[in-house]
Amino acid sequence: MAKRDYYEVLGVAKDANDRDISKGYRKLAVMYHPDSNPGDEDASRKFKEAAEAYEVLSDPEKRSRYDRFGHAGVDGQQTQFGSAEDIFAAFGDIFGGGVFGDFFGGRGGGRRQRRGNDLRVDVTLTLEEAARGATREVKFTRNVACTACNASGSKPGSQPQRCSQCGGRGQIVQSAGILSVQTTCPVCRGAGSRITDPCVDCRGQGYQKRELELKVDFPAGVDDGMRVRISGEGEPGPDNGPAGDLYCFVSVKRHKIFHRDGRNLIVQLPIAYTQAALGAEIEVPTLDGPRPLTIHRGTQSGEVFKLAGMGVKDPQNGRVGDLLVQTFIETPKKMSAKQEKILRELAEVENIEVLPQRKNFLERLKEYFSAPTEKSTT
Image (cartoon, rainbow, N blue to C red; front, top):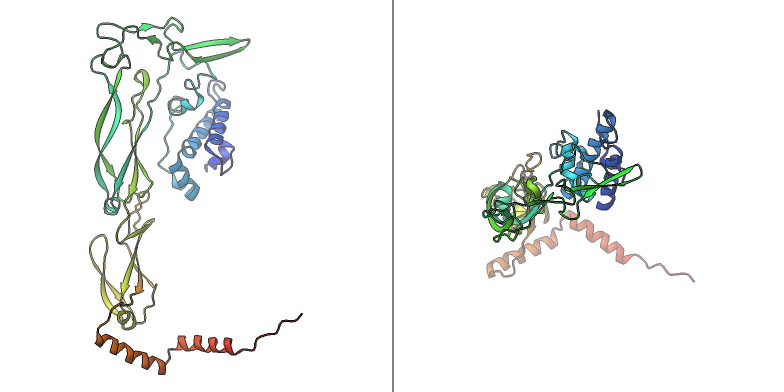
């Protein structure tokens, strides 16, 4: 069965902003939530379909690939949601307070673990590193468990006390007629317990900021503006919840010779007038060293030659681009007396033997200026 368009699934326009996309997803998630549709397989399918659409369209990089290539652009990139619980863990934060807890009374009556925040680190690569792939050591700051209190937040020898407001559940239920709404406990903020004797080292936080180093592999072909995700290296989740992810945002240094255009590399190569007119065998630079190139007789300034397979690999599909060599004729600013003499002789010959292209242009130019000027009528 063919997948539906993700914008159609969420009921939003293709130019919808992040707020509209979140709003569309929340509406569908509430409508098809398993708690309100017990045993309804169609509702369960639509619940997962909406989560899949939101997972792509809420991610700027995935949305960009989807807009360009459709489902083929994100195949293999989406999170596989095996159950509703997976969806709760991934997107519960957009509902503000717990994972769907504001709308439904919870699943199993217990507190759900919340995911830690994602972290970002910026990494600069050279074009060679981006093209071939590289392993870099990145530094970033993250909360780590306090060793003094073992992340409990309480002073060694003491224990957190159960919250009297929510009875340790972390959630409170408020009823109004037939409607029951479950919200995060305002006293313990969902923890279910309160620290009465805080740890001195971490001041009751349970975690301390530390600067960490991590080796990260960047795939061959990574481009400027792309990001590499390292799962589970983000902030730790509250109450032993799953950790967030670390995102390495890539910027590629400008190269002195090459300009990158997707999978292709472009180099502008100066050649002499004699090489362009008579043809020549020259060497051109590539990322793998110099390569021979045949300049054919009569090459014009701006003409492009292609060296197939000498570009950059696409990290998504593995295809390799080409090296495009754009030639331009370099005019010397200084000449020896001999060079000037030869060029003057050539100029005299060209005045006698006008090239066909130039002759055609000169004839049209002559006709333009010799044509009678039309008088304007009043």
